[in-house]
Image (cartoon, rainbow, N blue to C red):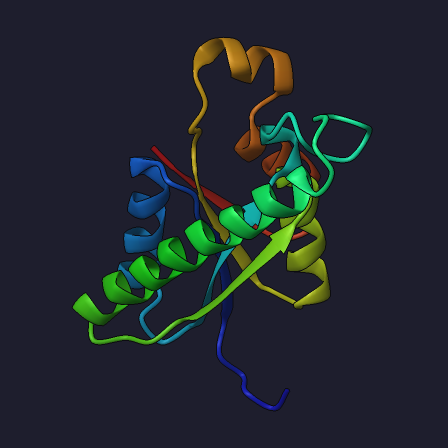
Length: 147
């Protein structure tokens, strides 16, 4: 890549804080190369790897449905960017939220991650650990957390 623009990664999901993080990125870094990333976390399904679910092909059906929802979410992210007269890149990956975000940021040579502070309920954050908290602790680049 020969472009010297700042590269900003914005993980997106279906929460209000996620959209707020995207809007913050668009406002603070209008000249950046911005990528909205959605992680399809297979742990959100009881049909995932490890023998969950009983019907053959159930996980594949779940994944296909999750990808369709991700496509809609990322289309919405592009619409939000268009409100600012900007274009963004979008992508989706399948994996565990925090690890996938960190790996994507490293492999994509991003300069900054802008992420919503949380999207899960308090009990889920206690049990699973906050994605944004994990990203902040483990990221090798600056992270801006939006509340």
